[in-house]
Length: 389
Image (cartoon, rainbow, N blue to C red):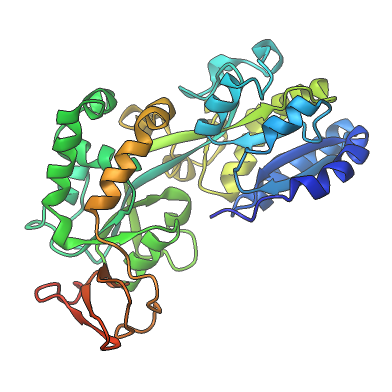
């Protein structure tokens, strides 16, 4: 989902040499890069005469501490996810913000403004389903209803998001999910719920996979990143999204501590936070504007299809970065031991390709057992072909 990390040691000198000539903004090299340039970078340069040097990274901030400690860091402003923002703020890697300089913070959605960050957009994980499905699922409880909605399900092979979804399906209110999940009993409850559909689940890892599995008919429902599930994207014509109980989080701008261009960084954040600019971003990609006023500038249909639409947020769960910093390692270990391995050496277009793993799930959700020395693998009886195939 991300591009390769910048080779900081080789490029830092070059960045420093040009830092005085503009604002260096580091963002994710994902599907949204062109949209960020369209909505923010090019317009800011035209409006202020301050050129933006836009560089991409993979979200790894491990070199940032060395830059900040060394003084005169080559980066001015960074797009960061909530985990990196929280940790970087605690470690003194980002400037503590004077929020009076970024606009009316009362216009932002909940959780979009913090001590060191100002929200760029909201993204979400929501329930997607095929329009070939008989009926219309409306909640995670429906996702677990195999009788009413028969067929294979997709789930992300990770504790994060998956455990929250399991508790929501089991009747836990969004406001209580992390309180419950912070207890041993709550974790056990989530895994018991997952056990109910384990045999009917196709596990995926890459962001685009859930939509591809749905489009191919290998599954009938799956949580997935809304960016990749937008029905307006080519290939997604038969996908639909149920926004009830979606999970959302916010990517933010953070000013690198020690930047030589702090004043210009504030000017950029204020510019990018204006509803008119946020509207341009949400027209290009399925991210919800962090500034609520941008929704009124979008068409009604487009606004309803975004993660930060008022009615959607009212029923959504915000992903708790602090919870996953504290508990993520232990929960991922338990999840990894519980979930089936994915066959790593099997080509997507070859159902009968052998695997060296003892037991794993193939690309269509079927369990395989490798027979050592045979060069072949057998399907586990009862794992069957996926529905709609």
